[in-house]
View (cartoon, rainbow, N blue to C red):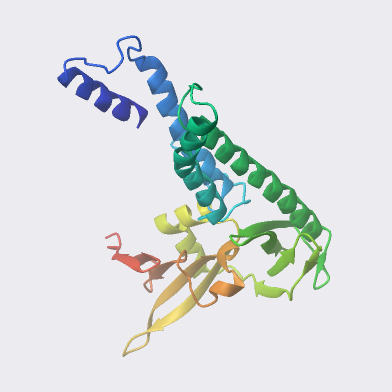
Length: 281
C-alpha cells in the first residue's frame, strides 16, 4: 500500500514536470515512503486495540491478536482525532493574535494533543481491562473454576465490560463494573458434546477459518427437515465474545454449515450471506 501511494504521487510529480512550490524543499521520497509505511502500521495498531483483532503476520502466521481495550468503533477516539483536524484553524487564529511572528508546521499542537489524548485513553482502558480480567479469574462459576477469562469493552464507558469465562463444561457471561469490582447476573452456555456432525462441520473450510478466529466458539447442530424426513443437519458457529446482552437475538458474526446425510457440506453461510457447495463426487 505504501509503495502504491508514494508511487502514485511520484508519477503525478513527474507528469507535472517535477515542479515543486518550494525549491529549497525538494521531495525526499525515501522519507515519504517511511511516513506512509508508518501510517499503514498505525492502522494495524488501531485495529489491534479493539475486540476483533488482526493477523499482522499473515500469510506466514494465521494467529489473531487483539488487545480488547476499545470497542470496534470507539467514539472517544474518533472525537479526539477529528478535533486534531479541526483545531488547527482555531490554533492559527490564536497564534496570529498572540505571537504573529511565530512559525512552524501548521497543526503540530493539535496533532500532539490528539495523540496524547488517544494514548491517555488507551492507558485508562488498559488499566480497567486488567482489573476486570483479574477479578473474573478469581471467581468461581457455579462451583467451577475458570480455565480462562476475557473482558470486552463498551463504547460508552471505560469501566463497563462484557465478560466471558470458560470452565470445563460451559461458558459464563456477565457484565463487570471494573471501578466497583462487581458484576451482574451470570448467563451460562453449555458446551455441546462432540458428534460426527459437528466434527464434520469443523473440518469444513468455513469451520476451520471460523474456529481459527473465534476466541470462545459455541458449536451447535440442528436438524433440518423436508417433506420426507430429516435430510440435512445445520451446524451453527457462534463466538460468545460477541453475545453482548444488548445484542440478544442478533448473530451478525455467526456462521453456519449445512451437511447432507453423508456428512458432506452442501451450504456455507456467514451472517446474511451464503453459498452453495457442491459435494465431492
